[in-house]
Each structure stands twice: as C-alpha cells, then as structure tokens.
Image (cartoon, rainbow, N blue to C red):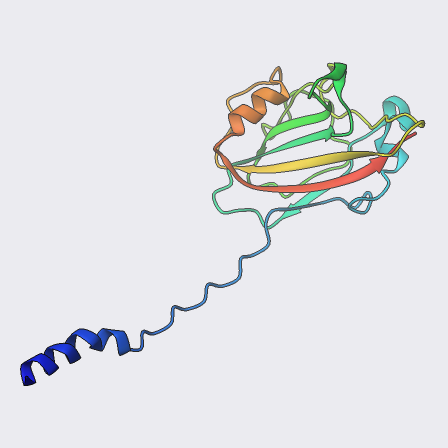
Length: 189
C-alpha cells in the first residue's frame, strides 16, 4: 500500500509543480518606415512633383528608418492604384528604382533621369517608356488618385537592368523581402 501511495505521489508530482512562466517576448520594434517632407502622408501632393510642373516635375525627397537587419538593397515602386490600363489589372507606373544600396537612408529630391546612378542604383522605365520619375497627372474630372510609394528592403541585389519591367522586379524580389514601408499622397489636376 505504501508503494502504491508513493507511486501515485511521484506520478502526480509534475501536475502540481510550479513551472516558471516563460519570459514575455519584448515588443517588436517598428517596421521599415518611409517618409517624405514634401507632403504629409495621405496629403495633397504639391505641384512641383506633378505634371502641373510639366517636364520640370521632380521626385520628392524620401527618407526611411528602422531598416531590417540583413538588408542588401532597396527597391522603390511608385504607382497609381486608382487606374486600370486598357481594362486590365495593370496600373500606371510612375517610378521604378532598385538596387539602392542597403546603407542608404534616403533619396534626394530630383533624382536625375538616368538608367544607372553612380552608387549602382538602377531606374527602370515608367508608364511613358522613359527612365526615371514621372509626375502625377490624374485628370481634374473625378476623384483624387492615391499615389503610392512602396519601399522594399531586400536581402539580395537584383540581377536586372534598366529594361526590367515592374513585373520583372516583383518576381525577382519574391522571397527576398525583409520589410516594406509605404507612403502615399493624393492628387488631381
């Protein structure tokens, strides 16, 4: 009988043991954050960055922080999700720029329209078929369009050239995205 009681105590002992609670996980830090001083996030995009400035339209200064560890390069896509080209899922592409060095924390205002920048950054062709930034041009008739800048932190350098399409860049980035920051602005003429 004593053996049976001892056996029951030994078997049930783990049920009554006080396990030390697991230490709480520290809160996650903020993710990749993209900002611009040219306008408030979600605000109206000023004329110098739009087709209202004509051929003199320039890209706004962009800055980012909270870069994920292991970032090798960045890619930036500026598009107008409020459009549908030729009744398809294709949107107007305003800027495609990739292989921005992972050490970068900003792009200056007025990035020159050259296929390759001195630091190795590559610019693809926009909707017009020209290299570099294309200002916003939503017509006055109708609602504001929501122009979206998407910055991707990547764990690799993309093996693509300036002839790459948005689809080429998205496909090459797939499986290599460490973080994403977004800022958007509104515009119509």
